[in-house]
Length: 102
Image (tube, rainbow, N blue to C red; front, side, top):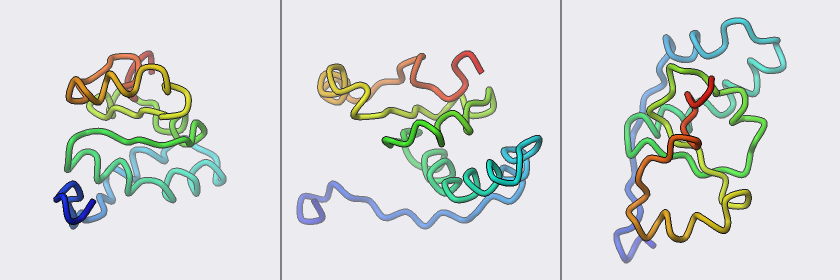
């Protein structure tokens, strides 16, 4: 993938204000889980707005209207749709956005 220039390295700084907002109102266990995966959200917001992850628990923790710009797709759950979605250039899908019905 490196040889084909399909991988882009991003240097993304942590966003303490965003992390604080995302963890407000959550239990210590949920806060720990959110902080463990917050880098995915920070990178998505800096890059193409897409997170591809199998972690439905993390997805549920990040469901907030503030993150409506982030598309979280689970390649296992959406295995019948993901190939066509990628072939179309991975356009935003409302139901995959973290702010959908948040």
